[in-house]
Length: 120
Image (cartoon, rainbow, N blue to C red; front, side, top):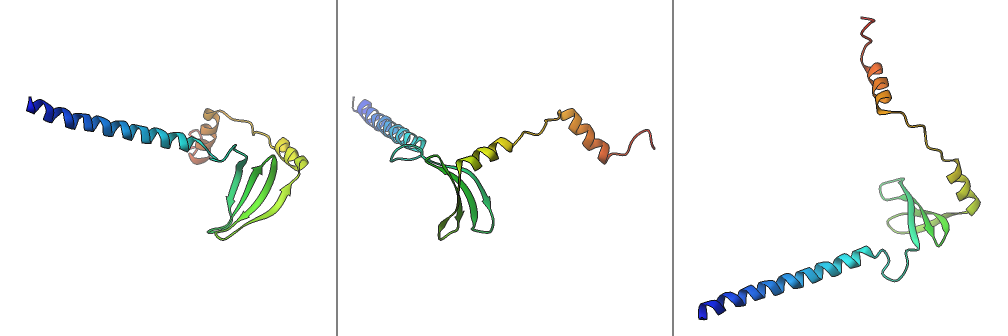
């Protein structure tokens, strides 16, 4: 009987540790899903471009406004606030290029790299 108790106690301890670990991982996962702990998701980074080793130009959407920001290691500066008309005009002028099939693109690439068979 003493041998059975010595096996049950570590097994229960191991189960308890796994349950605590599962609970902690579940809580961390739920917290990671939240983008902003204090409320809604009102700030979105639309696009960012690096202009130096630590300098970036960022287009952000904040409460419906589009802001062009200059970001360095020490500061963030507002470069320009885009008007709604500018935003709509820039999104309407962007068109998708016609997509060529893979076969067409491959044949064009190969014809420019490989010599023509009939001309040899």
